[in-house]
Length: 120
Image (cartoon, rainbow, N blue to C red; front, side, top):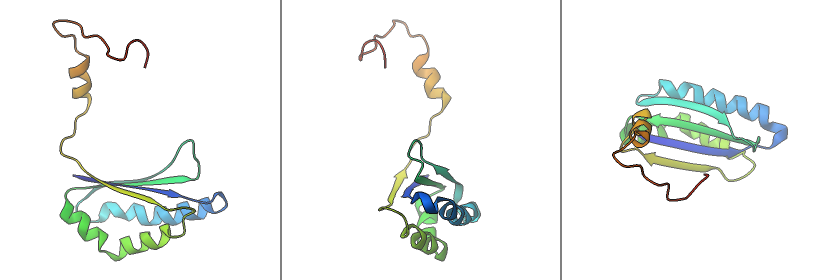
């Protein structure tokens, strides 16, 4: 699986229009072959940041999308952002969930000390 993360800075005065335009491009992503999920979210506490996340079944599907007209429209839109966008791709080799939490929080034969000491 490959995760695409995009962070876009939007001028406050154009945020609503920009968000609508971006949502119109992100929503259909889930119909693209190989797209497992996509979402648009707002950064916090920086209210002018928008995040796009898409999860792809494999690199072949992602590359197909990156070459598409739909992605070209997305690139044209992010050129209007207030600053340079951040685009990152992560190749996921393993996914763990609550099983990892349970594994590390389960009592062991002897208790382990927190190496950072008390607190966070």
